[in-house]
Image 1 (cartoon, rainbow, N blue to C red):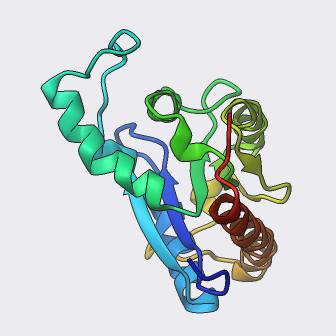
Image 2 (image 1 turned 180 degrees about the vertical axis):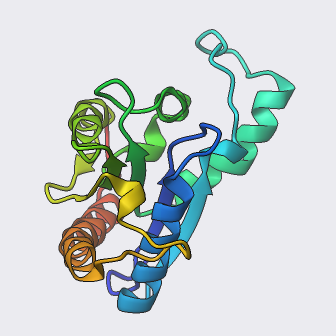
Length: 198
């Protein structure tokens, strides 16, 4: 794949809780990424992929229901050059729904960059991001240093889902995206020239 083509970004809404705020944040980011950078963003809502907590033993096939869900999700993760995870903070960490989807996969994350958009109360979800850095490091992914964070997020958007003070979050998103795209291009070229070995 030519190095100058636009990287494919997968944006994941991590929360599946009833009444969740995540889709609002994800819609803002996707609109911003498409309008400001012309990016091709694949929106993945984990609510659409309720994979079970019980996984098959190593070397064994998943259940038919799990296989159907994986057939809809895994190729999309594999096709992505980079990921943006939109996550809240639950009990100083990230949602179980996100950890479960991460754990159902492995090589789909290898040698790819991951950016973060977090939201929550006073902490803005930043502790969830710090925990995710450890998880993705184990999966040979590269996490982006700069993040986008919404503190007391439900007060930062109007009823139509638009940020009430867009200058700050738009600037933060640009910084994160610039870094994400640099890594996405560099790692895609490296994977093409020399397939990543674990």
